[in-house]
Length: 83
Image (tube, rainbow, N blue to C red; front, side, top):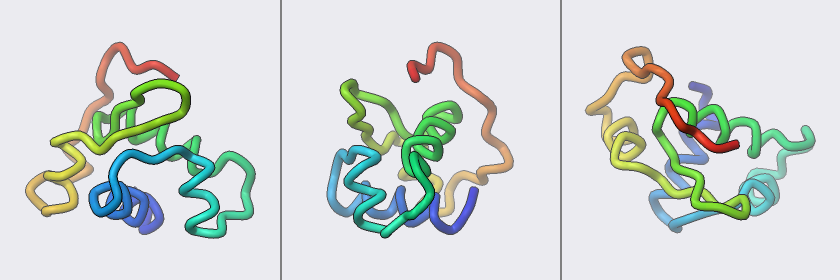
């Protein structure tokens, strides 16, 4: 997990569901598809869930991570994650 990953999760907790393009604009990310790639990786570990059409939501596990009740090092990939 990077500091930017934490900022993405915190923004989603504060503002709700987000798309990668909104996050890229919010953080002025210049690397193409950075937010999409990071959201996809966080979905792989269950911190966010893809709702469809590029929209993601923060999961309970993502909340627990932000509240420091879950260590990212303890996470394992979840099955059935849609890209």
